[in-house]
Every structure is written in structure tokens, then in C-alpha cells.
Image 1 (tube, rainbow, N blue to C red):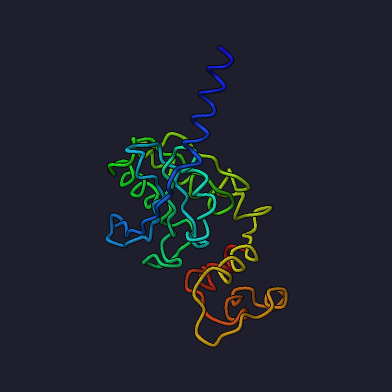
Image 2: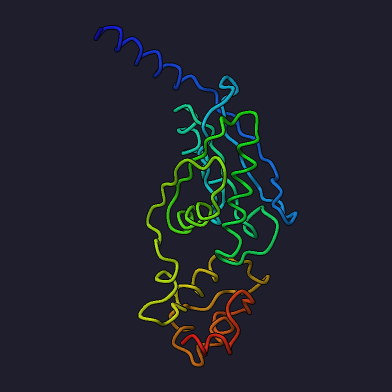
Length: 221
């Protein structure tokens, strides 16, 4: 019995090492027509498999290494740029569309011929938060999420002691939204020490319409 188990393990290991990983880039339409850049990694020899999905604002193309490991373990791996980031269409408004876009993406995944209808999501920080937001929408086929280093309370992520975490929000936007050509971001520490705080985007170097307007910020702080 022990010999048979060792032989079986060896065969499985050999098959995984021989997996030929192929990648295809697709544009996946959301319910409002916005198209999101999506990379599908799979082994053509596997007709159907469970799918591991990652939705990220930090460049889907950086997932190649981990994608290949998932495929060699028997899964299909899907990496997607969040709305308004990198190669995806639309305008990024942090957390605003992630629930709906997550639902639409998972629903699309389950309809693909290479999917067995079961989807899991992985990732940390913002990439973990989008998992919670997708799960709330209860998409068919979402079997598991594995959020890491992220919030479990949306409120406590954006508020600290009842005050909005303006440094967190503005700093993230400064690093992850398109910058006007030729603009060099100001030092964040200096920008956040300037009053009024309602003008923090101007202090950083360019307007960020995604931030609450000055009146709203004054109400929050």
C-alpha cells in the first residue's frame, strides 16, 4: 500500500511539473460596459478546473510567477486590473465598484469552458478588501476567499477614533491614480502638515476629484 501511494504521489508531481502554462489577455465587460483587462493562465491539457482569481489595482502582469505555480497545482489562475487602473477602462473610485465588478467577473469566470464553476479569491491589502466586497454580493460560484493583511471592518479601515484617515486615503490615491504629465508629487509629510486639510490634494501637487470635496472633508474632520 505504501509503495502504491508513493507511486501515485510521484505521478501527480510529474504531471504538475510538466504542466504547460499558457496566458491569454482578455477584456471582460462589466454590467455598465466598462471593460477590465484580464489575464487567464491555464494548461490546455486540463479541460476544466477550479479557478483562483485575483483582482488588483497594482498591475495584474506582476502575477505571472504565482499564476504559474497555481496552474501547475491543477488550477486556472485569473488576474484582473481593477477598474480605472493599468490597462482597465473606467475611473478608479476606491472600493466604490469592487463589489459589482467582483460579482460580474466571477459570473463571467463560471461561464467559461475551462472553469468547473468553483472560484476562490486570494490576495492582501486592497486585493484582500475586494474579496469581502465581492462576497457580500453573493456571486454564484464563489466557494472561498482568503483575504490577508486587510480590513474586516470597512468603517474602522477609513476612520480612526471617529476621524477620517485622510493621510491613508490621500496617500493611497497619490500613489495609485493617474498623475498629470510633468507633475512631481510633493512630500506627503509636508502636504499633510499644511492647513486647511481640505486642500490636501492641491498640497500634494494636483487635484484628485475622487477625494471628498473641501466641505465634506471639513465635516468629516
